[in-house]
Length: 160
Image 1: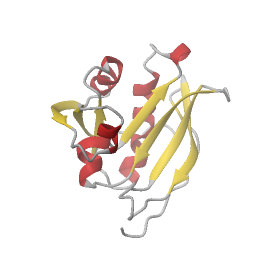
Image 2: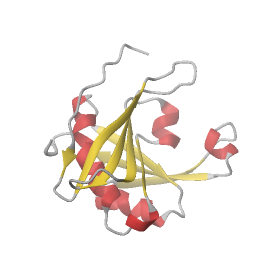
Image 3: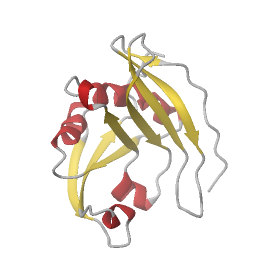
């Protein structure tokens, strides 16, 4: 795994939500993990965390096929406002800064909210694939993943 340098970011905002770096995770060659940024999502101007969005940097096969570059979750009481999609749009600048032009997002086929988030940010549905039996997600009981491709190169950066 080549040397990796994290960039420093202030709060990303769209005036409705703020997204701030919560922690940075170094990659692990042994575990085949890529470096990642973990962001907390807050209502604009507030400090209470209402959700999270993570961005994994790199293109390892199992990440692109099964894990995806972006993961997100919104606390139940705050769902239904499109905050996950807004957060994804806000952090796309981080991917651009790391020379990523395509982001893969995966989700379970029955997760309609996550699928809607992918569609709302402009991802293209590619396929539903079977998870291999040696995959961690398979061992947790998951069997299939929807794969969405988000081509981000050339998009306008988020307000920082």
